Image 1 (cartoon, helix red, strand yellow):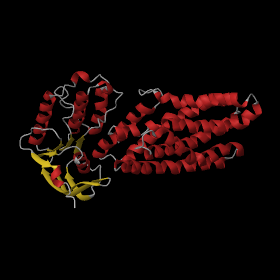
Image 2 (cartoon, chains in turn red, cyan):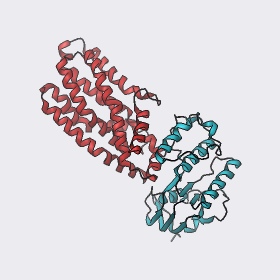
Image 3 (cartoon, one colour):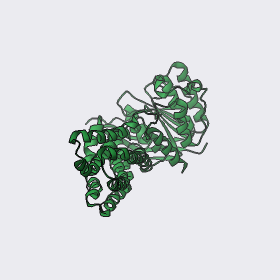
Image 4 (cartoon, chains in turn cyan, red):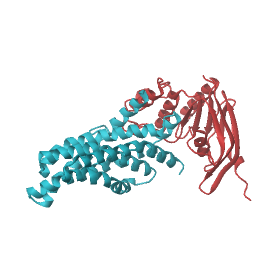
Length: 219
Length: 195
């Protein structure tokens, strides 16, 4: 138990916005920047903005989740942390599960908070905002899980940032379809499916990630 | 110190298309030290990683009793944190107190971020991490790289003390290292003969 607490403390210190490593506020600012630019791009048509704004928030959340991927696992593999953990008998799966939690905590809740000012910027009404927030709550753990799987698969590749971004996008399409789709149907079916996909991804991520990191040692 | 043993049976290591060594057997009991020698590229680091369980051998098995500690070229300390805090992370995992910080000349560097440390200071910080693990089996990959003569003598002394206390030390280095009673294993002896 204390092992997990120690690991989580280090991960949060590295990943939370405003932490010592510096650039961790970027995903959040990026998210707000997209929401701010969108009305400039489509023009001041309140009806159009209201109808499409929720979807834009979803796309912005997806893109913001991609930003920290290159520093999620690769630095710890390069500087030997994973080797040292392996020698201490701490399984890669445990490390990846803790990292997944820390990664989600470092962007999920903050994206949901930032969705409040973003909803004002893109001009969506309260009912839509409610659905967006529930959708993000159900969908962001899945986005974090996809992110950590891709980060672990690309761990040995130089300049992996752009590649991981490209790999995440097709995998995130189901989350986007049901998450953003719940906006137009207004139904709970979309939200439930988003949550189900998220759960499956979260359950899978530690095992996929652990195996990928072990495989990267052999190359 | 708990009893420990490290044995390798008929190891062979393949990297890419090349067979680096084959038929390597080795058995170390508590209180023994072994110096693995050989020029660059003969597989010293690969042998260490195989023994540590981080790399699968092409052929052969490794058995060990007792936990292993690894010192290699990777520092495994957070670069942006002060040295004291970086070491505290491993201390929290290992549950042991930092040992010999003053002896390693690190006591006055604890407030300095790891990224500002010199090559020799980084190596000594890694040794502090190794000591803190309190593991009976030491796997050291080029532990003398970047160290001055004084620090080299200190490492030799630390290894001698560890072995005298019943531990195992396996040291891969192309440099000479003086530890009393240390065996030598020349890796080129296990290079496969070309047909």
